[in-house]
Structures are given as C-alpha cells and as structure tokens.
Picture 1 (cartoon, rainbow, N blue to C red):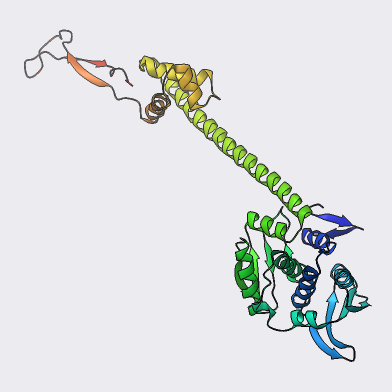
Picture 2 (tube, helix red, strand yellow):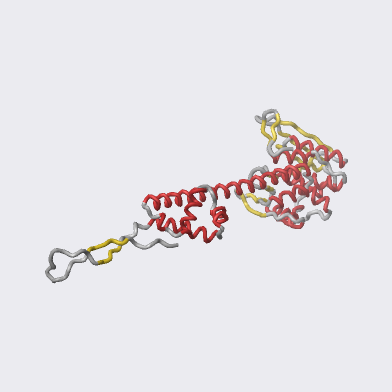
Length: 340
C-alpha cells in the first residue's frame, strides 16, 4: 500500500486503498458477519422490500469492492440468498445487491438500530468497519490529516459518535450541506480508528508517511532557522563593516579606545563570523561584544566631532587695539579621544 497508488494509468487514492484492504477482510464469527452486513446496509442507505421470498434488503449503486464483500459475508454467514446485478457506467461499473433475510438478520436490518449499538467489542469493530466502507473516507497522510464518516441520519451520527468516543476515538460532529458528519483531524485519532477497524497495512503506511512528514518538517524548520540566522549575521556584518570603513575614511579609527579598535579588527578579519564566534575570539561575552560593535555603528552614524577652540597668547602686534590690549592668537585644539 502506498499513500497514492496507480493502477492501469488511473490514480488510486489512499482512501480507496484502505477500503480495498478492509473489503478483503471477512470476520470469522457469524455474529460479527451479521453486524457487518447490517452496518453496510445502513451505511450504504439500503432499503427493505417485502418479496415473495420474504423480507429482502436491496443496496444499489455499490462499487465493486463493497458488492463483493456483501456476497462473501452472506456466503460465510450462510442462510442468506444473494443476487446481484451489474450496471455499466461511464467511468466504472456499479452493482445492485439483494439479500433475502432470515429472522435474526431482519431484526438487525430494521429501523432503530442506531440507538442499539452491539455490546461485544468485535461486533462494534464490525459496525465501524462497515460504516467506514459504506460512507467513510480518509485523506492521504501526505496532506492534511482528515477522516470522515457521513452517517445516513442524525440518529446514526449520535450513535456512532457515542460508540467511537467509548473506544477512545476523539471524533467531532458537524453538518455539511444539511447532512450529518463525523470527522477526525488528529493523526493519532486516525491511526487509532484505522487500527480498530482492522486496516493494519493502512496504519503502517500512515505511520511511515507521518514520520517522514514530521521529520521533513523538522528539517525544514531547522533550515529556515539557520537561513534566517545567516541572513541576519550577513546583514549585521555588512552594516558593521560599512561603519568601520566610514570611521577609517574619516581618520577617526586611531582615536578610538583599544577595546573598540580590537572589535573593529576582529570584524574586519572575520566578516562572516557570528556574534558568538567574534565574542570567543575577543575573549568577551556575547553582550560585551555586541555592545562594542553597536558602539562602532553609533559612532559612524554621528557627524564628525566638532572642534573646540581655546584662546592662547598670540604674538605681539605692531600696536595695541582700540581697547589697549594685545590681540590673542586663536589656536584650534582637536576634541578628545572617543571612548568606549
């Protein structure tokens, strides 16, 4: 079984493969066979007819797998007369199956069974298997997890929901286009239900695909995380290198503190290094290394430090000024060193 098969050039869905596996299974006990027959009758929306041979159950427009399963179950149980009719369709053939019922089967096929779920565990599994075959589907584990049943009536929806929850399946109830719906979107719940109804090959395929999917998701998340970190490192390094270039071009690098010059040299020598790697090379904590690199950015963003002037005695002039004092010579003294 594969998550998506192909037969004769026609794609086979995972749901169809699960049903094909279940259709080949025939329970050994007669009471299980009876409950699966009755479950298929109700799930496929069959109807009862009174004929000359007695009470007859008719199921129409059945796919090949379910029609064959009905015939096998009836023969295995015994005491049931079976007839079927094949109808050709545009894409695939459909079948009509008629079952002549004896008294025990007539009771199971009658109305009101939705409120009288079987008590035996094997019979409960037979009913659930029948309803999945007759009105269920499951998406491929490569897509979003989804399994659903479309019960024939709200009463059946309530009965099946109660039965599933008793067996630990976290099913949810809803309505689609006015019809009741039971569904699961939890991978563990889907695996549990498939296991309960006997789809062992489907469980293995589902689990295998789920493990690969989750592993792939974890790898992708890690790659995305690392890619984002690399992009962040490259962007930060580019800004820091540009700031260092700007400080060097302005002649301000030599006026920096030894700590800032060491940080600038480390970044220049290792443009691809992460903050943690630079911190190790400088013998600092990440916080200290980040502070020094950030300080380089701040200094580069500041306009050049303004010069400050100091008045010092100038040379004697040929004569006093109007106030009688000699003029001073203006000497420019550059600002002090930038500090960390």
